[in-house]
Length: 377
Image 1 (cartoon, rainbow, N blue to C red):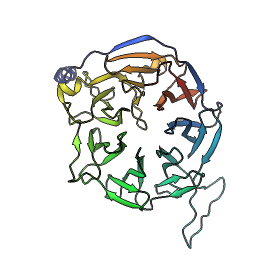
Image 2: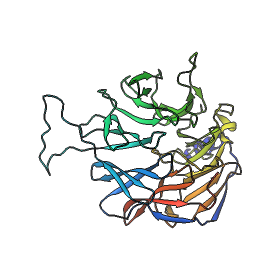
Image 3: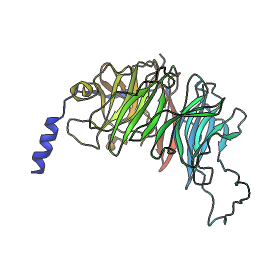
Image 4: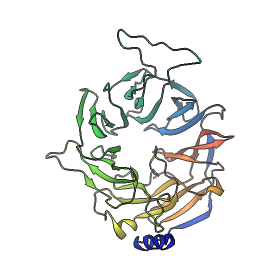
């Protein structure tokens, strides 16, 4: 009976165009660790500055997670381990080695000037707020709500930060305008809104909405007059996560667990028109799948290359230690990128076409940098 049910579900799902893969692969111009390989720490989630000369990434040491800023050459710039001062009339009292404050810092997003970035931190206190790292290295707290704030994304054109807050009781999108220090609520819905991502022109926000195993992709225009409701880009019963804008702003790539077998643990990458002209469900949306057998990086969406035609991603090939592939969106063909690294994750690409990603060395996660020979637009 169970076999019949599985076959029925598989038959009910629409088919998508068959993906072509080239395991022969391509050789990158170079692959190297961003910083000297070390032990006793795990480095992850690299984020390029707009200029591409600096990378900020997260470094875990036990329960603590700090942010490390380095030049692309590996030269150290700053380490952020935010510890908020005690509130007036209170004191912080810990027993070193027994009970200590845990500082958790993550979710980096650079300002367009490349000198500042916003991140989420509990400041060693327990509650999460947004902080901005200033050009001189100072760290300034920019939200102080008693509910958690996070998933921040800095507009690529001005000093506006979109973020998610629990202050509405679940999870809504908010807009923080730094010069005026004004916060505006952008969404009012029954299901949580998560992971806002600005379009390259700074006019639209892509995000996911939903809960459990059914999230959809949508886009809204903050500040539009008259206001307009979000435009849905996916509406089917499959889970869609982490939309990422193509550099030219014309398309959005996202992870989806749609597959012909109906396996909720098998993931793919779909690419749709950002203006909402593509189908939002059924065979039409299934035909927009450009890569299958994908490892979804929840902290990092699909990594577009500068040409807005290719996407770097990690392929779900356990025996090959999860290699990196490059998908051609138009041809629906994927090619192995021969990095020589294992257990790859967190792939991201700079505007100049340099890849940064996490790989494992002697059971510890390290950040690597790689360059494709033809990665520029």
